[in-house]
Length: 68
Image 1 (cartoon, rainbow, N blue to C red):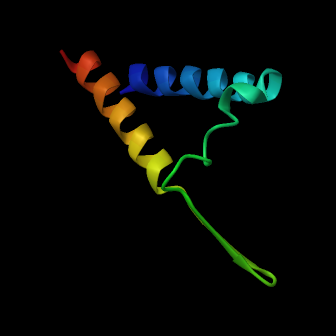
Image 2 (spheres, one colour; image 1 turned 60 degrees about the vertical axis):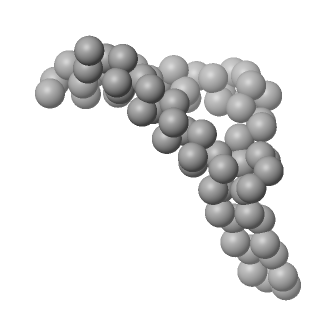
């Protein structure tokens, strides 16, 4: 369990560093076809359906590789 927390922490630090020093690498996230962005007046709703499906697929592949 501790090993997984350390790995998760390292991944979060890596993502944070990428977002801080090179934000253009992830500028596509949330702008994929299928991501819903609705706004009217003062209301705004953003539902990143396609982006979350992509992240789910990538995480499934990564976790399956680590479990074998």
